[in-house]
Image 1 (cartoon, rainbow, N blue to C red):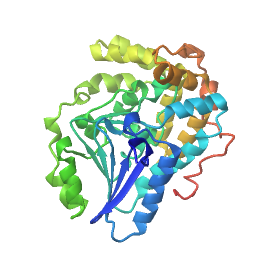
Image 2: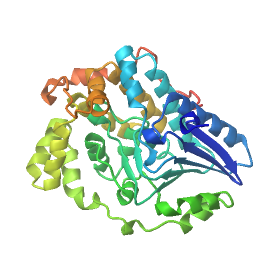
Image 3: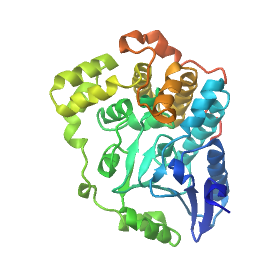
Image 4: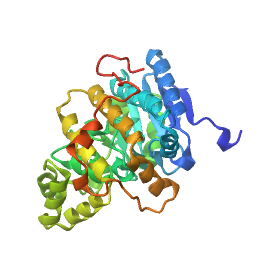
Length: 356
């Protein structure tokens, strides 16, 4: 069997643990619909299996756990009418909810690149481990999309307005900042992950992980020192005011953030800010995933999602032509339409639909 013939999700049990390895290393383990379904099947089996006490998820290759969903497939589907992507998101978001409610320790090795859908299969787990190589991000506004997979739930609950900054700019964070923002629980050296995995086959996670964890102070973070301008600028009610405050604040990092925002999709920025504010008021991950499903389906029929993926992934000219191109042209009514029920029907997680 060649590497291309191997399953895209590798499953094995050893001792007390079940291991899920995302296995598309050339695509930084980007998630496909069959991969989501395979992970869900494994969790169903292992949740009922008394021999499996801990579940561990990691990624094949050297680049990272998971770069997100397969956005090229979403691009192609959107151009063809968008019939497949809602089904993918429906199962993916239910998997995200299931991971958050999983009744056994779910240990995520968030080594290397962890973005978008990669956050969804890791940051809702009960034991989230980052390393000195971790780069965790929700970069969706750069492709005309919104943070999904429960990203607005996680980012709306960070200290102050750190999550608003990360959601709007898509800025990746390292180990220390992942802990600060609540996206991770422990820092472990990348080279120690194989030994940690081996120990998890023999002993419970709550006994094993602390022995490998490092102090976050050993890993340089940036956000704590930037709280003053982040909290002051991103507390604004509109994206336009956020950018004005960033430009006026005086800190070089604030001006850099403003420049980043001015290159993002205006529609995606406004929908994302509205989603974060709503997510902060919602009382459960399931309610937020229901909201995000509406947003994702709305984005699928938008100009900016196809154009953003074209510019970043397909043609790679890094020059998206957003429409509308100015924030002032994106009306409140246009943003409100992103929160309307999709023609495919709502996700229904908060209404009691099973997560699997």
